[in-house]
Image 1 (tube, rainbow, N blue to C red):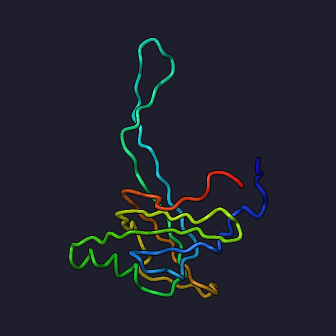
Image 2: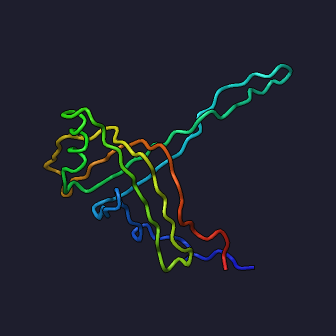
Image 3: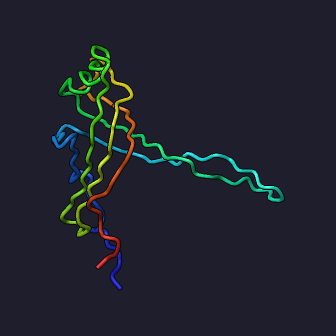
Length: 149
């Protein structure tokens, strides 16, 4: 039976991010979480409060180097036209040195929660912007290996 080795870990710098198939090379970090929404279910004769999953919600945060006004413009699109902007994000993990394969995660119907319309700091050597978002679906068309060989 093969064992886990240190070189099986994945180097985060080998990741890539795409928005509607366009690579975002200025991304610094990216995370997305799917959370179950549950309701309480009290059952007679049981002191434990049970839970029933009723839906899912997806949230995430994208941290970028501030090199474009793309996301501010997306937010202002709603302000000027009333049309909200939805997009697909694809996160790719592909570290050839890990031997784990490639993972692609697609987040569907992504929508920005907020953007800083303008920012600067005399102390900042590199400006970054953090963009929280929601999403309404996910798929994993390519996954990492489940076992070690």
